[in-house]
Image 1 (spheres, one colour):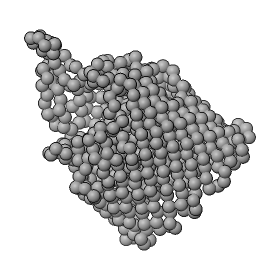
Image 2: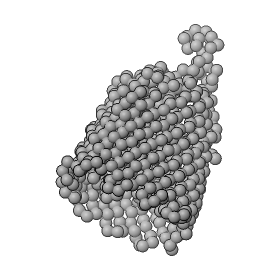
Image 3: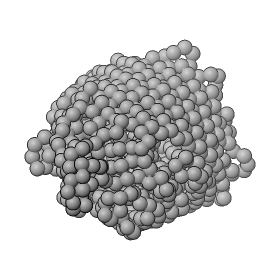
Image 4: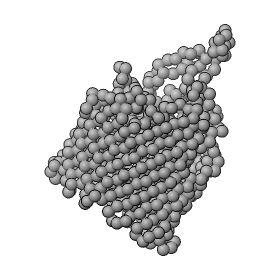
Length: 614
């Protein structure tokens, strides 16, 4: 509760006093959870729905309208300040969001709007992955392991000093994962492997100025995909094809910052990102350049202001496939953001107000304002009450603007009930450049309480009112529509208990209601679980021996015909001597396999790994 977070206010602030439904996964939480990817680790966040679609894709989101693995998740993901968001589909492609988990300092997760600071597409929340400084990762660390499902994995990381006040780390990571089976029988042919490497330089210039240079490259040596594809030029004919996707990319980021003291400072960041993805459905090459400046200062008694400017430019080149066709096949666009947020101390040490807005100009939709206001009260040192109202937006994706989602190819004569014409055209769901932004007005209430030392309770309530929802028309064919509306409301309750230095227990429950209205399909109502619950515990049995356990409950998903399920994970970590660690985990132990967010079965799995540090 006392860990400092930056995602809400833009500057360091204790989580206990943050006026948002924020949860923090520390690096130690992730290690004790036993998960091997960032997407899987997010299962530990109260109220966060994580549904595995295949061996390499997930649906991740909170508060409903989570979409699918390739459409409109309405959640913004950041990794060390770099946006991990695919504008082609308005989604996060989780198979390329990866770091060495042991190097994660924390993951800050906001359930609820974060658009005032982070802009369009942070509609339902923000996931901010922050890795450790190079100063904190000195020495060499080698990890190797494998098992069932997680067939083999290895990481190597080395860090050292660099001149006076500088530090660096270099790293490489490999993972190989088995294919999953279909519920109807047979393999899903989705085995995959990932190879990535990178570096980080942290440099100091004087006592207050820091520089960071960070780079990474990745590729998937194996990325199998099985798909049923329509045959262009053939009337209502399809084929089943299994191929290897080509997935690779790289980024380079530079950041400068200065802490001037007395609540003042600034950061300037820029990065270049390249992503390539060639699949049976479509081929994509995307380049992004992003520049971001943020400044904060204390300008009067009880007044703190944060402001910033951000610009990004994106260029994509698309090779049309049989199921996804874009016109034009290449398009460039830019976004300009300006924001200001001020925090006022209304009653010294007790009552605070935060008001701000972000102005966004996106070439798809023009100028949009995204205001927000937050109020919080700390009547004593043991509790915080907060309230917020926000108005974020989501910009339509490139698919919703320029794409055609092809359901098949048909002879125009046969389709109209006449003789064959010989003219065969695609039919499906088309984009529309006249789509408006999706809008949300979100109302939130929260309460945090220290019941007694080591025992805390965190509760949040929310009501989300959506308008101009982009979705599929009732007939499925035609064009995307923005005529939908809807609402979601619910609550999250989390109780955390630390029993001395040797044991910790956390339990949470979330309830969600979703109602979609208008001339759109109602699938969003049935694709988010109404009830989520979890219980996690970790015990230090001895100084060098730990036991971990977690059980997760996910309610049924009628829209996907997925039954309610419980997942049990158990793990053991042993350190026979300093610098040596052995860990073994069993996951999904209650069932041989179960479905989560598709027709694919998620299997019971086991793995073990050895870590050597020196």
